[in-house]
Structure formats: structure tokens, C-alpha cells
Image (cartoon, rainbow, N blue to C red; front, top):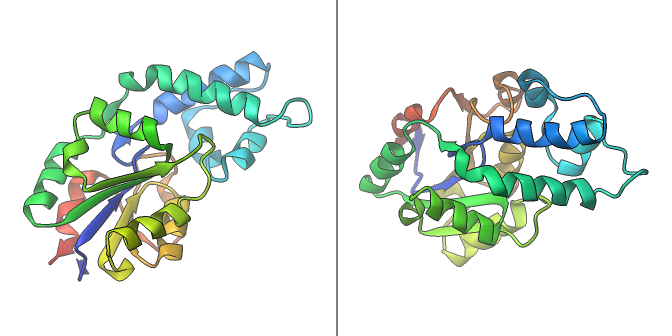
Length: 215
């Protein structure tokens, strides 16, 4: 049970948006084009991580043969063209609505590019639940820490009164650097075993979130 929390900071990809299979199929297209081994879902979950450039190298991309920018831009184009085929995780509207009714402020903090993030939230019809949305000013998924700190300062939110909910070790690292609490959900882009290694609270699905907080 988390007490003293008045603000929920949501990650987007993998946490609210169930896009893991889309990400796997997209990266596998790039690998196939380069005649590199493709990834099973298990292999993807075990190898995905931040920085994104390091993840690309782990799965076989050779940046001596081509600069990182080439596959990175190709990935964004392919993913963006298909993101409307993804679905929200089960219970997203119910959880967001319940937290709003309890008086929690809700924000989105994402490594997605700002305009595409705003477009995606509107596409899935959930933008109205969030007081503010903060993405990056480029597509290459740099650390979210700086924009997270700026967001809390802008909204006059004390870090110790916020909880970041995400699906990766990087989300835990961001929460730690910001100074807020963290809950990780084990149905996104990294497996439960990796998430539990952080020492953060790990849940199986969004439906468990509403029982975590007491105002």
C-alpha cells in the first residue's frame, strides 16, 4: 500500500498501450531486411532495454555498417503507420476513471516523441484523463528523467507525493532519479524476473493498481 501519493505518472508504451507484439513484428522486419536472426517474444522481452541504441546492438545491428539513425528512423515510420492496430491494456479506462474519481492527478511521461504521443492518446480516446503529457523532442528514446523533473516542477508536485507506473527497469531508474515511488507492471516490454530485480513493487496487470493507493 502506497500512502501520501496524490499524483500518478503513467508510462505509455507497454504500460497503458499494449504494443509489445507490434514492436516485435516491427523490429523483426528490420532484422529480416538485414538478413539477421529475428526475435521470438521471449527473446525480445529478455533483450529489450534502454538506451535503445544498445538494444539494437544486442540483437545484431552493426553500426559500423550503417549509422543508428537509419534503422531508428525506419522503425519509427513502420511503427507509427501501424500503432492504430494496437490496443490499450485491459482495464485502462476503468483504472484511469477510478483514480480520477479518488482525486489523483494523472500525468503521462514517455520516451515517445511529444506530438506522436499526444496523437496516440487522442487516437485511443484517453487524453482527457491526464492533466499533462510529457514526451521527448526527438524519436530516439533518451532518458525521461530530465523531462520528468521539469514536469513535476512546472506543476508544483513534490516527487515524494508521486508514483511512476511503468513496465521496464528504465522506468524504475527514472523514478529513482526523480525521487518518486514506482510500481512496475509485468505485461509490457520486460519480464517479471527482470522487473523484480529492481526491488520495486511488481504487479501482473493494471487491475491491481487501484488497490495500491490510500489517500
